[in-house]
Length: 108
View 1 (tube, helix red, strand yellow):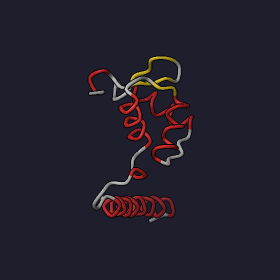
View 2 (tube, rainbow, N blue to C red):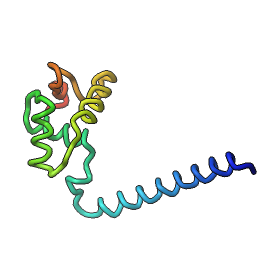
View 3 (cartoon, rainbow, N blue to C red):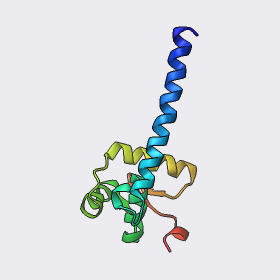
């Protein structure tokens, strides 16, 4: 086994180990009641939009995430993630620049 193969092998091994650790951590965190901190930024955003019942600008989403979920969300990261979901037609729609909502049938 040459150096490159050795490094690739250990990279895959470490990725597998990390996946197991993350899975275990998720199981421990999710015992009993799920904490709000365990939610993804898109999960938090979806909850905020459901609670609002109307489209919100990304700045307002970030503000509410901090106030209600004690979650610090990076603006560019959130916009990027939401834009990808909008392009896929998955969970979110864009109603104006940097303003997002849930499709009408999912707000119920």
